[in-house]
Image: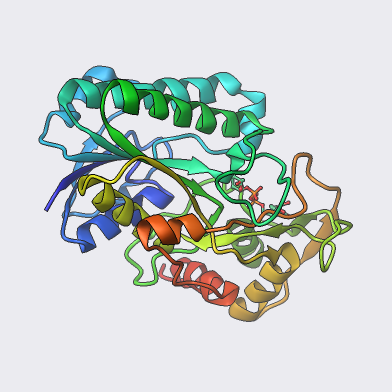
Length: 323
Ligand code: UFG
């Protein structure tokens, strides 16, 4: 049994990671400032420290509690906001993340799994996108993720620790057992927005463009279930603890789904037609983004369990209806 500090463990992906860590028989310490994470996402079996990654003293105190490894998911993630308020992203996603590895180095913690993003690639030059694809982020959010990956690379050499940077594609879905109930506040992503349109919290769903060169004119994305993402974090942690070398790994499904197909799946699961409006393209959206997960399979032995968009949507809809 190992003891893992999960920075951002009360957030959407973080809480699923905590569940997977506990399920694997390890101990978890959640470090979260609850700025977007939520108390309802905390597991009673996990220790909880309310703290900010910008508070170096608090971070160091947390890190000195016999921690064996860290999962860092305490980042800001709104792509649009990162272009308007880059300073917020510089401070949280770069300075805050550096605090984590500096505290690790001071406390002798040697392993970290980092929540990175497909946003480090920018506009895809070929599909499916593998880890050798050029890195040209087109938004500041993606830049912060890449910047920290590069710091990890340097620190792994200079401070002798190992890391796995996991580049998520489109994270969706909820824990199928209903253990995680925190709905994201002000969701920015397609599926939670669809749910808001279905439950009347929004008047309609705006689809950004239907004139792309894709099979139905709407954008193609690689939707990967959050429970599958969580499973990959545990696999990565266990590999690192076993002495595996540092790696950068895509987490996607090698399957592209259009916006229209997500809407159709949602209408089927929810049992009603959505009020859909086709509007202008959103700047910066690639027509198609799909991951190769060959490396995840090779290095971690990981494969997604969820391969069907309807099954994925159902987990979100079921959570919505837990009350
Ligand atoms: N979309 C709509 N209407 C909406 C919201 C989204 O049509 O109201 C469309 C987008 O145009 C896109 C697709 O739905 O084609 C998915 O959009 P999301 O905003 O849910 O996700 P993105 O693919 O834009 O972004 C995701 C993650 C980012 C990450 C990026 C690149 O949310 O964190 O993938 O990997 F940076």
